Image 1 (cartoon, helix red, strand yellow):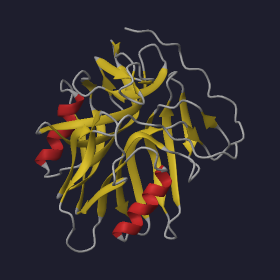
Image 2 (spheres, rainbow, N blue to C red):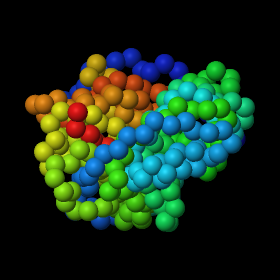
Image 3 (tube, helix red, strand yellow):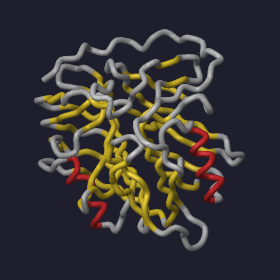
Image 4 (cartoon, rainbow, N blue to C red):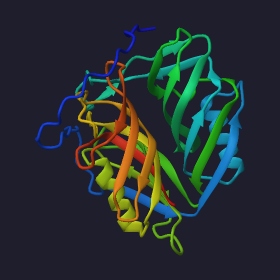
Length: 298
């Protein structure tokens, strides 16, 4: 297993410079629809991830049984083992603007602190995209992208899903980024006022402004926002700046107020394996590769 140093404390706060919002150049043509969305009927499900199953099987099976298609699932507690994950990394081949590290394989029990999962389809089969924070057997607190088929549930994990019954995430090749990415599919227009929205935000869009766009588009007022993705570094409300151009993100608390103001609190891991947590400054945080979102009217 490639070794990485134990993450140290996050850097001391540095005042945000009055500069242009950071962006990242991708290898392919810029897609015309920067914030893609599908609205529909919302359904929730509380369940338990069963030991002995891969994390992909343990999450997607109960959702299929409940008639839920695309969803965001939040999990906590329990344990994984064996467990495989990757970190964000620089691209070495010129075919991507950012990439992943070599896999890190952890033996023994890894304790889940919390994770967020996008659920959809890939090659006609149920598939998850999962970012989380966990405690490894040696006591190290780490974060990153959990591998869906190489990670096994070792002890029961608490899960709750917020999904749609008439829209889904579908993983397909994306020419802009050269990755296979989730994007929302389903009926173009939901009948009646939608209760929830699935969305994909493309590179270089500000994530808070994208949520504002979604709420205006679908007539949603106060709302809860959940999801995962990546950012080109980060600028937090307390003045901290993360310089890493690639990252893995999960929203830990997301809200839209009645006046449209968006608050997103995140956990983030950078390319060095350091975890950063806090509230994002609206208008200052560009999506790196993709961001998958579920917005539900409060």
